[in-house]
Image (cartoon, rainbow, N blue to C red; front, side):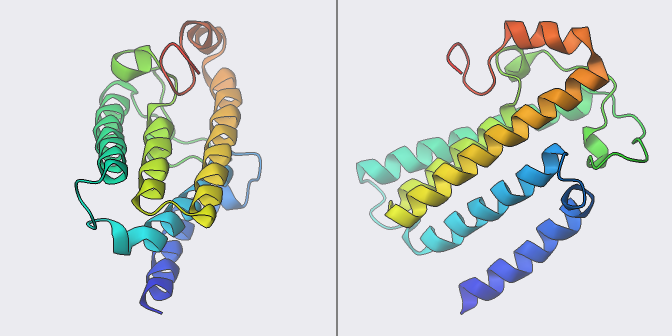
Length: 182
């Protein structure tokens, strides 16, 4: 019951942040909302196992993914905020304020992958899955991955509209989530 109450409380926060995106099914934030919800489900579903058997291979792999996720998220967010030159939002935009950049960020992790923040969420989802791998957790992690892929694809369309040929050239030089692979 406590997990359900926590899920509802945290979901209210996610809904309040994502409200504009939820009204616009064509925005990247629409898909991102559902990915966040599935990741929240993964966390709460497996929270009882986060510190269990700390030296088991599965737990070590989980902590590696979670640590990589946090490191990448901090790095990418710092670059995005410091180099992206946040502009004023378009009145129709469902973007969060910090997402309205006027400068394409192409250094650091962004020099290799176009979506390091979504990559960090992928790593986090699979790290949370490994805490107690189950069929339901695998389905949640897989669907969150599909939703993050959809989020990135929609965002790329938005970025082409925002940055034009500069973003298209950037797409040719970088991978979506995993440097040199995908």
